[in-house]
Amino acid sequence: MKEKPLSPRVQTKAEVQPEASKVVELMPGIYQLRGEKPGSHVYFIKGDTKNVLIDTGVAGKFPVLKRRFTELGLRVKDVNLIILTHEHYDHIGATSFFHRTAVVAAHRLAANKLELQDEFVTFRKYKDQPSKPFWVDIWLEDGTIIDLGNYELQVIHTPGHTSGCICLYEPRARLLFTGDTVFAGGTLSEIAVGGNVSDYVNSVRRLSNLKIKQLYPGHGKVSSTPDEDLPKAIIYAQTMLDDCKTFFEAFIKTRKPQDKLGSAFGYWTEVQD
Ligand SMILES: [Zn+2]
Image 1: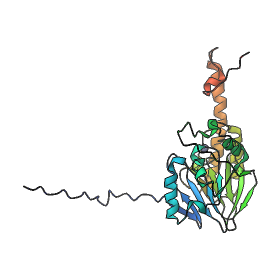
Image 2: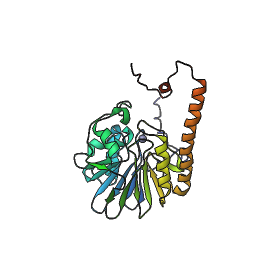
Image 3: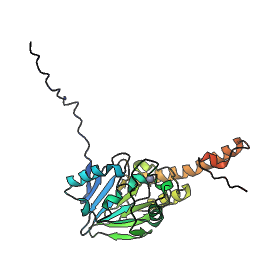
Image 4: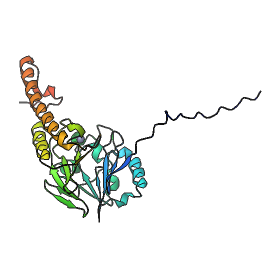
């Protein structure tokens, strides 16, 4: 007897989970291209005369990023300027694919490390990501203004997570692109190589003086409550500072003669007499 062919299994309505959109228009002409892990979110701003990309995610996810561009009716060469929020592999990875036609900008403390391909800081090789070199065309400083006509981006140097971190503030719409400096809910990043807690405290305090309606971070959710998030971020940053004191007080009390301070941080070079 001939077997009846199996009918294709149809998902019930309850089983069909609509995929969250990967391209979201946050403001007129400002799009979030959601990050493909482990990469960061990428933001595209359609300026009056120039188009800007804020961060580029990881190199390995460039084909996905290219597809997102196609969804927006864009090509890679439609990007005129790339602004990197800091020097980490998950924010800079796909930059080299745009560099033939786009100008690349980063804070000078990030630019130096990127140009020297400082793997100890960028983590590209450590995370087994392609390390295609590019250089930084414009070395940014705190206070630099990038005028796109319809939008203006003010560079705010916010060291802490790393030394080369910046946030980008749009004063008319009151938007803040934060990279890894502050996330929704006031969450902060870890202190990575080159960063430090006291700079982080100052950076977050400076940001809390701005009038901000929307916070666009490099990972996680967009926040519409920066007024609540930033005071929390200041408390978190201060807590990190206090935790350091507590750690060293405990370390001094309990350390054995052979313990070295550097062993607590995993990296230490002994200087030979
Ligand atoms: Zn980072």
